[in-house]
Length: 176
Image 1 (spheres, one colour):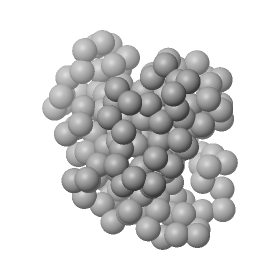
Image 2: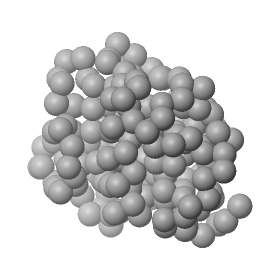
Image 3: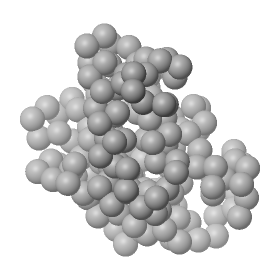
Image 4: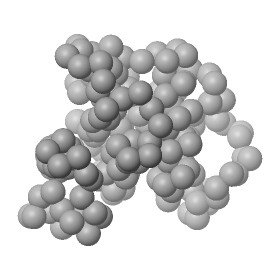
């Protein structure tokens, strides 16, 4: 297992294809997606291919596994980890994304969810949604804290139309 990201790696053993939706290899939709139109099949894979591209451009990498975070959904070793998506029931211009990390104590969850939010909501992000809301699944021990920070980041973005710089914090009490 490499600890250094390997952009463009061709090591595909144990990974599903980006065009395949394998329900057994993605997490079950969690409470953030309840009551919303969860993407499945071709809809899921289409958005996930776009996610791969955006994450590659912005180097949203899981450094533990050394790959683009979008690849986690395809990693058969971690069938309950990755992203699930749903179109918001109240606003079809909003996509909800719920990140389920590999463990309940994953130290990268805050960083990965924040980087995902930034990638999906950047000015040049090419998708059909005005906003992609991001949350961490409640199985993570710090999900309440992380999700409160993501909510603050989202509110700042909606109020100003801009994502605060990485050095700025939407929550002044947060060390990140």
